Length: 141
Image (cartoon, rainbow, N blue to C red; front, side):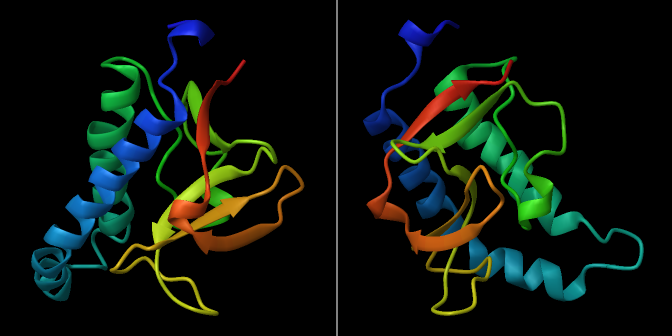
């Protein structure tokens, strides 16, 4: 995939909106599973679940099979981990997508997934309304 074939910001926005809808609709069932989960044996279950669904529902929709989009990160220190070939940046200020969540003051990975955490190139993170940003895909060299 070359830069001329990248999905535009509207296609990215639609993919993220569909992922938000998926999270909002499945979260009640996931909450029940998490209550019974053996966290001692599998501490990263939630991060893995979020990232796998992110890869299938957003990454594969935007990039096709075989291309790896940056992970859906629970914490900002996770954004540079992994072996991915593309990342989402906000248009203009080049902030990196980290995750969807909610909350005023304190960001949490929880419904209604109406906020988005982004981190600047200098490492400063902020939480903004998800709909306020336009994203573009960038190939990681």
